[in-house]
Length: 342
Image (cartoon, rainbow, N blue to C red; front, side, top):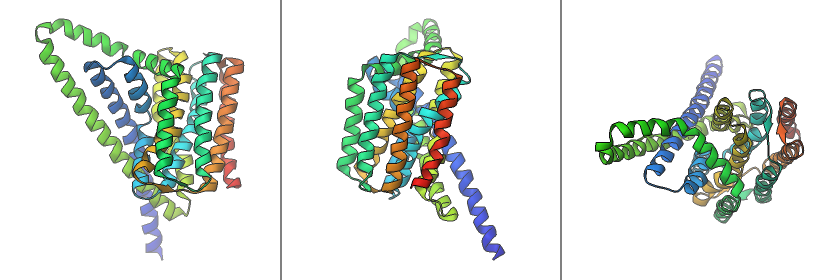
């Protein structure tokens, strides 16, 4: 009996360590993959619109996208839904709450917040309407991914936030590249080709790291769920969802340090749109999934409620200060009560 308990404890420790390492690998790799993908796209002459719309918006959501594909492929759809919904809630409440204590008062544009906020809430309503039936088909997945494309193409304000954030992140890199270009002008073409190969190689390594990290996270969640008799959905929603929100937190803390306060809120809401559509939908396109319908619907409805409250707060007050941050953190804490309603 003691041997069995010791073995279970060891397996639990290994699973927890794997979960932490997997999330850490995904966060680190997604940042590198996104950074080098953007640099490669610029070197290839891609337009700022394409860079902002596709690469920046998807870059910080690579962990959720990788989890969606991996968990759907092996038949654990609750990990896909739980991770993305948990990430949306964490970004809209927990991340905003933390940011408010580092960045002072963050001003927000009422019209901008209403437009991108309405897009995020609409995306969530579409998702919750699908989860009620207990499965997501290939057609549902295609619809979610298509919804992301439509929302991102029509919402100029979301695009503006992402492209401005991208430009700020690359200011120092652009200055350094310009200085190096002046020193090596006679070999510019050769250096340019080497630069493209460099960014391509590191982008591939980054995407590989995200994929490996996602697999480790999914397997760790499955193991913990079995050992602790806790549903995979709850572990994914409350633990993995927070972990995969770290890229947004890191980028927004960077923006606070550089005093680019106007970019933070748009970045967070825009990432939530990706989570509610592309991140969840891409996995079922390849492998349809069954899910815990009641849990997905309950937590999804609370995420909608929390999102509406945050959007109204930002729109009416036109700022995020410490009071707003406390309100955001309270909304996140109250999400644990949804367990009682499942």
